[in-house]
Length: 379
Image 1 (cartoon, rainbow, N blue to C red):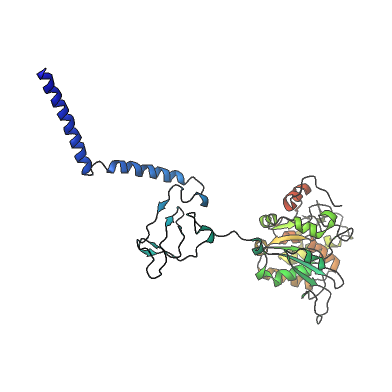
Image 2: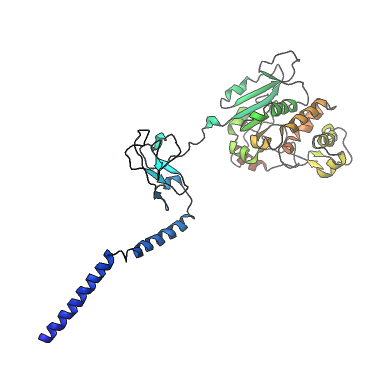
C-alpha cells in the first residue's frame, strides 16, 4: 500500500508541475499570438467575402469590414469648444459622425454639416435624393398670332417657350418669344429654341404643335380625346432619358413603313417632300444627292413632328450645327409645306435614330406612356 501511495504522489506532482509550467508560459505572452492570429485570419476571410456583398448604406456600421476610427480623447475639439463625437470608418472610406469637427488620429477631418436625420443615429448620413422640382422639363412650340395656347398653363410642372411665328420685325410677341420668319412650319421655332437655349437646355424638352385637342385639328395626338395635356401627363420621363429621343406618336400610319423612298421608280411628282429630301439632307450633312440616295434610300417614322428629347441627346451635336441647320432653313428655296414635311422626317435622324425608325405600336405605348398592351382609347 505504501508503494502505491508513493506512485500516486509522483503522478499528482507531475500534473501540478505541468499546470504551473503552462501558466508561466501564458503569463509570458508566448501563447497569446496564436488566438490573435486565428482571429486575424478569420477577419481576412470575412473581408474577402465582403467584396462580393453589394454595399448598402443601411448595412453600416454593422457591415463586414467596419472598424472604429480613433477620436481625440479630449472632451471637446481644441479651439472649437464642440463636443467630441463617435466616428465610424466605413468600407467606402467615408467617416460617419454627428459632430461638425472631429480629429482622426490627430488629423482634422474635412468639415461637413451634420445631417438632421442622423443627429441621434449611428447610421451614416447620405446625400438627399434629387427632388422633382430640380428636374426641368419644357414645352416648345410655335404659334400664329390668332392661336390660343393658354392651355399650356394647365401643365403646371412644365415650363413653356411659345414662339409667335408671324410677327413683323418691330412687333412684340405677347409670349415673349418670336421667330425671325414663318418658314418650314414648326421647324423654325424648334431650331430657334435649340440654338437660343442650347447652353441652358432643360433635362427634357417636348416639341409639339399649338393645337391642344380634338378631331381633326389634333388627330395626331396619341392620347384620349387627342388631347396634348393627356399625352404629356402620361409621358414617361425615364423613357425619354433612357432613349434620348422619342416620337410622341406611336401609331405608324402615316409615316411607316416607307414614307420617303428616294429611289422610287417611277418618281411621283406629287410627292414634293420626297423629291426635295435628298437635296435638303445633303445640305445638312455635306453629302451629294447620289450619296444620300445610296446611304438612306428609305426614311420612315410615325408622323407628325412632335417629339421629346433629352439634354444629353441634344448636346451630342455642337451648337454650331443647330445654328447651321437653322440658317439652311432660312436660305432654302423650298416652300413652307415641302420644307416642313422634309424636316418632319428628319428630326429622328438628327437625334440619333436610324433612318427607318418604326416601332410596334403597343410596345411604344407601353414604354413611352405606360399604357396596357390593348390600349386604343382615343374617345
